[in-house]
Image (cartoon, rainbow, N blue to C red; front, side, top):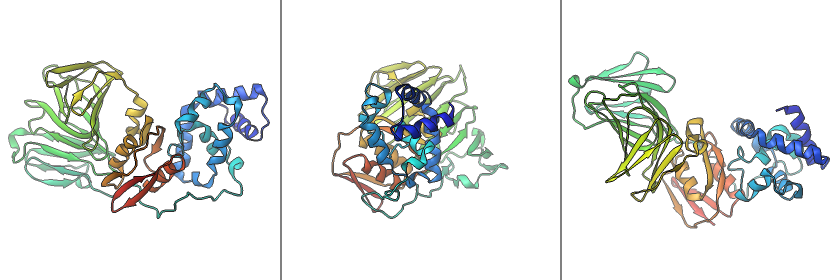
Amino acid sequence: MDKDRFKQLAKRYFEDNLSEEELKEFLNLLESQEDAFYEAVDEKITLGHVTDFEKETAFEKLAQDERFAGTKVRRLIPYAFTAVACSILITLGFVLYFNQEVLQGPNQKKTTARQRKTVSKQEEQYAVIRLANGTQLALADISETGLNYDGVRLSKISGNLYKITLDPKSQDFKLPYHEFTTGKGISYSLLLPDGSKVDLNSGTILRLDPSFNVSNRDCELTGEAYFDVKRNESMAFRVKTRDYDVKVLGTQFNIKSYPHNNYSQTALVKGNVHVTREQRQINLLPGDQVRAEAGVLQNKSKANFREVLAWKEGYFRFTDANIKDIMGDIVTWYAISDIEYQYNSNESFTGSIVRTRSLEEVLASIEKISNLRFEIKEGRVIVRK
């Protein structure tokens, strides 16, 4: 996309100075470069510049423009693309990123209806490892030189990737598993003894059988993780969740199974997966996903990987999600102990949230485009009308 040309068209649109042909060009640029806008505006949010602009003016102007009838932009408007998701509201995104001077005006420093003291982005927590011999470690203690405990070697490979090596003959099994935990606001990756890689999302627990890669490749997951499993025809890789078991030989897939949600979900990227609950088994092919709600395994459907894998890119993303679905993901990252719903909204939201934004910013943004109000009290978020 010619950014200078787009900036010129955006500026002229807000000055009511576009011909019909220029408007078509403007809309084509807007639609064809959707991902570029997400990234550009998310960068602005991360850098802290978005609050300098009056977003509502731009949105109202676009929403009232009859020339957008029947276009993609028009179809987006009813879904409350918002300041919660400044990055996914393309109609605001291009204004914020490319046309800053148009939005600056007498109300530039307008604040939200409810002022709050700024809260931290997420609670500072440690990633904890508890070995089967009872030893408890902080992830920060593991370096490139590594640590050895009764047949377990842990070493840092690079960044947030850590390698696990097991020698079952030397292990002291006081506990039935090795446990790897991510605190809120923390994620990291593990290279397992069989060569498989697991990326752990915030608020997740992975339990590894002490005999992993010797007599089995069994693990248990509470939370969310992305698995890239090394193929082994003679030893299946098994993941146990609250709602079902997942069996693979070698593949890539994402499992989401948080205790505060009423569902578990598995989405397959590559290979094939067998998902089993009691006597029912569902076989997934690439692009498929399956959910279990209230312990009932549902039929498979097509996965929205932009949404499913958003956490790996540093986002929360939603498509026609209600407030409980959104808060269900937010609670995994921010310093929240509980969500109290004093009002049940039937509004749906489509958008994305950058995980580097503060909890206050996220809640204030939702307030702007909904009839909901939030109160942070003693580690809880109270949802009101």
